[in-house]
Every structure is written in structure tokens, then in C-alpha cells.
Length: 360
Image (cartoon, rainbow, N blue to C red; front, top):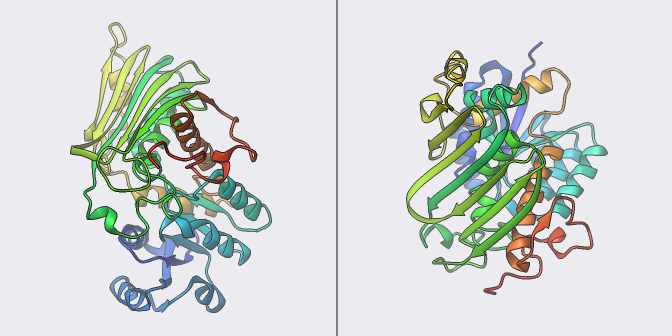
């Protein structure tokens, strides 16, 4: 049975509008009761724009004065872990923007905090929840496409110097990484959700054009436990922007090309010779719904209604964050990195910079 969830938003910068719009579209399933931002004037303006009755200049004040079921955490990345832990201690379930933390150490702190709480933490990886992605995972799991063989994952975006003038961007301490951490993560999270456990990463990272501490380009070769292999490219120096995924199975090639969100119209399926039955199977569930925060929020509320941890769980998002750490570790040490290799004694456990970027 559906409930109505009393919801708050912390951080009222650009991405918070996508959360507020998704909450508005959710109708009776959620009500926005309050917002918080260290910029009190911006919080008040945001609250007025989206119909929240009250605004606060800190999450602590909001949690002390409001009865809240769910917190949408939309602050800059360095605040994600401490604020999520604060909410967990108050028994409030958190939907946190990517990246959920700055390191594997912070991810494990969140997992411990969740274990001590009645509440949960879910990460925003909204590309998992578009109808076509759900269909692709079902067909992959059912074996309808045959064995996955090879994949490509490209996030080729463009961010100019003015974009990085925002103080927290481009820094290991505040953003946690470059396009690997903050831009391409949506695409390769979808890749990982389809192909399953990754096994080994061999990577490069470079600072090509932007005056930042972090990389502005990274590339990886990835092997998976099921035998598939993939390439992953993340860039913020590419003037013709695209987000593209291609999966080559025994029976078909499945592709999507978009920028910041997709519909079924952005996907194509090319059957292998002799497997023309794949295309009508794909097309029988055609949808005009666009991927985005609304799709994930629906799945989030559905899980809470059932009394289950909402997706994407900390265990699932830790897998993606471990991939990020492995990519940086391989790039900065010029060595392959296997799944499970980065533990508490590894320098890449506490910071994605690890032993230090070669251009530092």
C-alpha cells in the first residue's frame, strides 16, 4: 500500500531542481516539507519556488525541527557522507546524489552507519531505471540475447574553464575526482548493472586541457566475471558531446546514444544473422518514458512501501565506487587492478588520488 513520505532536500543548487520536479511529479507519494542550504537566502528562494513551507540554513536545524521520512541530499560531494550519517542517526532515509562518497573508506563508514540505523541510503544512478535499461537487464538475465561479449561506454562531454571556476570542482578533496567520478559515473554504472561483477581494470588518466587537480580524461579496459570485456572513456574536453553505450551479445547488438537522458527512441537493436526474433521481443515493451530522477524515485518509493531497502543500495553503489578507485589506481600506478584488491591498507582506499596523480 502506498504511503506519503515527508521529504526534505538538503542543498539547493542546480541538481536540486531535478529532485524537486520529480517529487512534484510523484503526486501524493511525497510531500516536500522543508529545504536546507548554507546559503539561507537561496534556501528561502528555492522553498518558495517549489512550495516547501519552511527553509533552514543547516541540515541539523532541519532534522531537529521537522518530522522527515526521506532526505534528498543534493550538496557538493564532500558533504555527502557526513550529512548522510547525520540523517541516518536521526532515522531518516537518504537519497544521495552521485558520487555518494569521496572514497571507499567513506562508503564503508556509510555502510556501518546504515547498519546502526533503522533507515537506509540509496544513491542516484537514474540511468538504471529507464524502461529500456530495465528491459535490457531482464533480457540479459533471461539469456534472450545470448552471452555478452564486448561493450563500449563513452561519456564524451565538454566543460569549459568557467565551469571549473566553482570552488569545489576539479579538486580531490571536495569533488573526489574528475569526469571519472562526477560525469561518466552514470554511464559506466549502467554498464556495470547490465554486465554484472567486473573483474579487472587497466586504465589511463590525463589532464589534457583544464587547470584542475584531477584528470579531465580517463580511459579503461575492463574484464568481467562472465567473460565480457569493455572499454570505458570519460571526458570533459570533447566539444561534440555524446553519451553512448554499446553491448555486443551473441544474438544482437544493443546501443543507446543520448546526452543526459534517454527514451526508447534513443536505443537500437541489431540482431545477429539467424536471430531476427530478438527485435520483436525488444519492441513489444515500447515506452515513451524518459530516464531520469522520476523513474528512480518511483522505484525508491515502491521499495519503501514494501519495507525494503531502496535502490541503488550502498552495496550496489560501493561496487561502482570500487570500480572508480580501481580505475584511478591502475592509471596512477601503471598496473592492472583486480576487484577486491583495494583494502584499508591501500592508498586508494582513503582517497581516489591514492599515491598522487602523475601531473601533481
